[in-house]
Image (cartoon, rainbow, N blue to C red):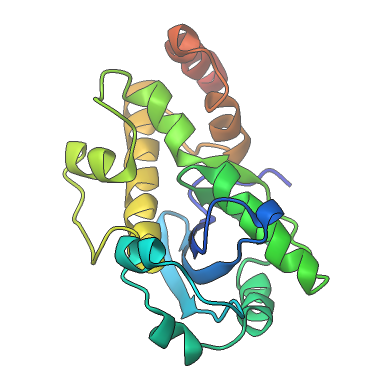
Length: 206
């Protein structure tokens, strides 16, 4: 079944570090479920990784060790989250990072997911080629998207990424006369050479 890009779960992890391969764990998950371009549900939870986080991560995220001692364990949160994303494709800003943690945390509890990933950052690099950079905060300000909460908190980042994603879909729809945009088109766009973006989107719409 062909799935559309306006029906996805946009997610964001906060973590103890950069790589689950080095023993890093998730400490917060935030996600926004979009159906036919409308936010229908949200998911947010801190999770206890079973070890202390560094002072850098505390200051970067605002999440403290004290907060995490009261949080449910990762396995409990991730079981609920696996249910939340069931049947939906997934979007994240710098998706390779979030996918690594999603895969690692779900592997620990022997859970799978069926959706594919698309990266809003890679898509933005094709659509906003003159932007000074493609960090979430820069793109949110560039597109005059409402800033919800604090950057580097999972649900806030997921909400803003969702709004950026919908803004990019609207930009493509308006310029190239799409009725609906298949999710697979956004995945391909993320890998299209920058000089070929206009031709790709024009050809894909016909």
